[in-house]
Length: 150
Image (tube, rainbow, N blue to C red; front, side, top):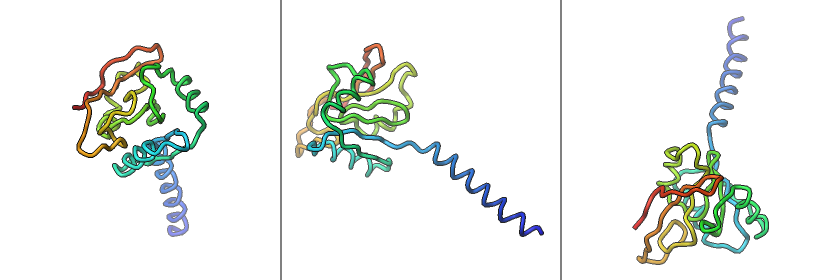
C-alpha cells in the first residue's frame, strides 16, 4: 500500500517543482530583421554566456512597433530589440549589464546601447573598441547612465 501511494506523490512533487523552476527561468526574447548579422552575433554571445535565447525574425515595421510599444527614446534605437525578465533591451547590451538588470530602478523599463559601437558584444572590430554607454530609460522618456565601457 505504501508503495502505491509513494510513487504518485513523488510524481506530483516533481511536476510541481519542475513547474516552479520553469516559471522562474527567464528567456532573452530577441527581435531582429532577417539580414542583420551583428544581431545574430549578439544573440550567440548571450547564449554562450549561459542565457536561454529565442530569436524572432521580424520586418523593419514590426521592429519599429516593438520600439514604440516599449517607449524606447529615438536617440537610443539600434538594430535589434529584446526582452528579459520583463525589461526592454535595445542594441548590443554587454553580458555584465544583462546580468545586473535587477539593479535597475523599479521605474526604469529598459536599458539600451545606442547605435552599434565597435567592440561591443556582436560588433567585433579586431582590437579596436570605442567607448560606449548603457543607458537606462523609462516609459516617460527619462534616461540615466546604467554603465559605461571604455
